[in-house]
Image 1 (cartoon, helix red, strand yellow):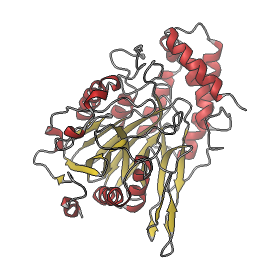
Image 2 (cartoon, helix red, strand yellow):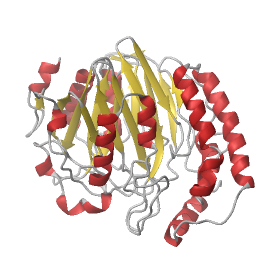
Image 3 (spheres, one colour):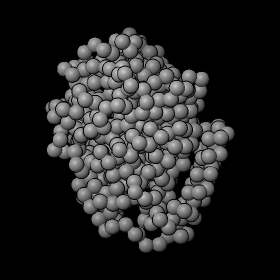
Image 4 (tube, helix red, strand yellow):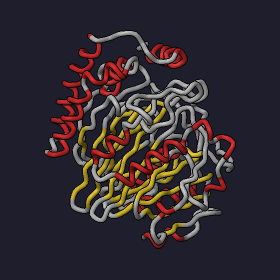
Length: 430
């Protein structure tokens, strides 16, 4: 199947199973800031396993939820409505677990029953942007539903890209905002990086480590980048950190620490223009760009065992990674929207997250050692997902009360405080 990927899927399409791996490529990247879609995804290929991690960064009120979809058979000639367009449905689709922004059909991160996992990023290119088409999130979900290996998922995505193109609104606060996409696609035996610009694409097999952070990285694609719009994204800074972390990573604990990385120091560093966008654990609040980590996922993929860990919430620095399985759907309460709702896990966690953001240096130490010890215990002895989520919910209530009792002044810069006041107002229940 991998050999099939060598065929052209666009003007610059190719797949290279490179000697020494794609990780030898110079990590020059490009792109520009997306006001709501800045992400980091990394992968490390070991002899006996593949490690994968992603932070999904979007608008602060753009809640995500875990969505289990079973394996299905479909009648001949069936159609499928994606986020913006309708396409022919496959005769069969795999069971998937998705981390999905509440308003779209596609997903930011996901896995299927065969151990394939995918994360996508926004990239900004010189190719025209289509007003409609499949979004990158649609392509991610379709790749998981139709590919039983990483190579098959890449092939499914590129064939759909050739047939239907990519486009349509991808933003929440600005629904007309659009972009092109790159992907990391992994399974227990390997991984690929796939980058696109319109209907052009290039894919390469990864043999060591790779990361993507909103910039094009492959030599055949870098020339497609919109160089004018690269600076404010801080993608080069983030990719340098995530690529170094991927090369060092030996287990899922290393990946969890990477997704909680704030850069040069334990807490967020805010810039006037783009907030705390220069590190993988992203916090919104800039004048020109404002993106917040709204979901996080870590996976260890072995041929004989696949394990997934998710927060199911924003801000991994304040969140708790819990085990999940594609074949074990959980009832996590009401799906969230962009309005605060205590029935939703995502919004219950925001009660803790948004309090801690006011003064993280003082407030995070009130619970994070307890959180880290619990995760280490779970990694050593894997609990049932339902038990882990129940314990996590109990601790979330305890930690939220503890932080509330210690409330003090907001220490963030004034522009950040003003930004968040507006988001609090927008999230108020109707």
